[in-house]
Amino acid sequence: MRGEGEMSENEPPRSKECIVAYLDLLGVKEKILNDDDSETNLAIIRKLYNEVIALQNEKNPTLEIFQTCKFKIFSDNIVFIQELSNDPNDSIDAIEGLFRIFGVVADFQYCAFVNHGWLLRGGIVQGPLYSDEDIVWGKALVASHYLEDKLAIFPRVIIDEQLHQLILKSESHIKDIRIKIDSDGYSYVDYLNFMFIDGLNPYQLTPFLTMEFPKIQNTFIDMLSKVPTDAKPESKSIRAKYRWQINYYNGACKETGFEEYCVDPGLILSYEEGISE
Image (tube, rainbow, N blue to C red; front, side):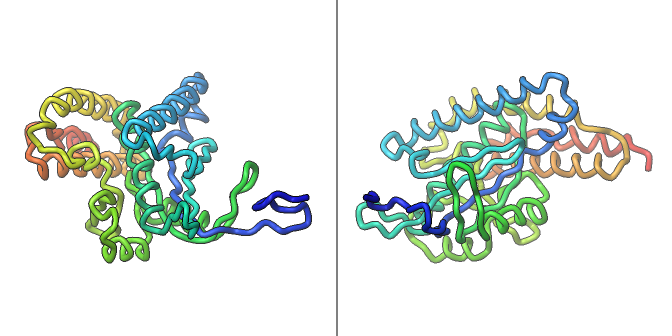
């Protein structure tokens, strides 16, 4: 006999409604192709994964996020999948699914950037998806990859407009689903607010930021030391991404009253000034 919820060999696989985040680690593909010590970068990916799990367990010890949120990593791409459900014992609607995905994505962005000097971009959508141990298939995967590949451009994880509107209309978890609107109109995950605010009094964060800021500053300096200084289009694109990251970080510092922790934009502008077209 077949157990409840199990699929027979002749029953076709079926997609489920999901929240899907598709992420790309910027520059990691080149590291894989050009780095003689590729095992080092593989170790960083594994460490990054463990750091995110530790953060999630610390913030949500009863949620056990990776028992509900599937995680797929292949080369420099990562996919987070949260199935939605109407189960009365464990109802996960779109807002609850977004809340869970946002927490994981924000932690992943923060740990990748601060701990390892890696930037990422991505897209988050809601739609039908099928996934098992071997296959990830469906419109939501295609749509989230499109947001990452064609629209995100900068190191940001942008949100499908339909989901953005859903967030604005919802009262549930609204304070925990933190977003920003960029100059081009796209909304994206405001992951630094998870670090800077997170419901705490700003004065209580001073000791924490005093420890974290030198780490962030050193990350910037190390990252910028590797930025190409030639006038090639791909080099200009890289510098634009780093400039966006500096502006985003400095904006978060100013919003929370910690202007003294801002990074000098001249660290990237000086490269531009020294380039002859």
